Structures are given as C-alpha cells and as structure tokens.
Length: 130
Length: 130
Image (cartoon, rainbow over all chains, first blue to last red; front, top):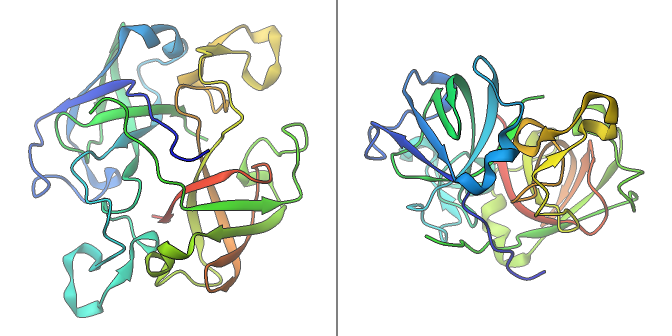
C-alpha cells in the first residue's frame, strides 16, 4: 500500500477557466456546468437523478502538492497555517469535496449547479449525500 | 493526467478490525482511535487543535474497485443501485469522507472520535470543516 493509483471517472466542464474566477467554496456558488462520466461507469450512475444533491470528489490537477503551509484565503495578516487546517487546494493529495445539485441527467452527462472548480478538472468519485 | 498517484499521509489505529464491526457512517459512531500522521507532514498540521471537528479522507484499501452496482446496506429487497448513488466502500476510487472530533493532539498523533473505519486504514487528507 504505497501509492494507490486513482481512476479518472469523468471530467467537469464549465465556464470557470482560472483559479481567480472560481468561488472559494461550493456553498456560495451559483455556477452551472456539466460532469461527463466515462461510458464504462454508466452502470455506477443507476439511481442518480435530477433534483438530488450529490457529493463530488475532484482531483485538482493544477494544485501544488509539495506545499505544507499556506496563508488562509491569501490573507497574510493571520500568518501561515498548515494545509490540513485549511480548505486550500494545495495539499499532498489535492482532492476537492463539493456538493452539487443535479439539474438534469442525460445518460452519462450530468448538468450540475454549485461549481467551485475550474473547467477540465478530473472527477474521481460521486457519493450520495448523507 | 491518466492515473494520479496518492500519497499516504498517515494511518488510522482503532479497535474496529472488520467491516462487520464498523458503523455504517461516522455520524452514528462513538468509536475513538488515533491518526498517526507521517512526520514529514508535521508542518501541515499547524492549526489543528483539540476540540475541532475535521474532515478526514481515508483510502479504503480493502474495498472492491471493480464493482459498479451494490445492494444498498446489503438490503436485497430494494434492488441494485449504482455505487455513485450510494456511500458503499465499493467504488472505482474507494475514498471515505468522515468527520472526526479531535479529542487530543500530541505532535503528529491525533486522538479522534467518530470512527467508522477499520484499523490500519491509510489516511490521505485532512481538511477544515466548512
């Protein structure tokens, strides 16, 4: 169990093209976009329907994986904080947890609301919200 | 961006030794245990303190990664469901999201409450709860 390898299950498409444009968190975002799930995972979507809110894990492929401390929200006045005490994308495993509302589902294409992630980001998991 | 490799940042130690003993979710668990973070990530814990509730991502190394549908909670009467519509450990990337209360912190050793994960499970991320 040294370095488990992730499988990319889909890709997120949206109008957010830079980190500057991205809302800080899903809970303050009205952005919509689509999640295109790879066809081989079609069956794994059984039960996913319009109107649900789901938990989506994305792999933040542009994040710096070697940074251990950050200025929370870029505010230098409060000093450096360990990445594990923040929601910064910079961290050893840059996995984002978001909650998206499903506005529409067409086969393996999910239209979602609440995006805080940039266009082209790989999706690695979808879970029922508890 | 084919198969990103995860870094193991720590290991969970607790008295839960089988899936049968594990509570279904962290929100119904009173189990306590420890998270031992690798010393190289010491700085990344700056700001993590006793009394906080943190989000912890674990890699469920015993889960079946090739299963796409499951009987939710083992109940066959409701039929098969796609894994992305469930919280089943079985899924392409078996990452568990839990929320643990930190009862004590000693350097890189965190004593936590709310465990729904078996002993020896690798930890891959800790985040501030939002």
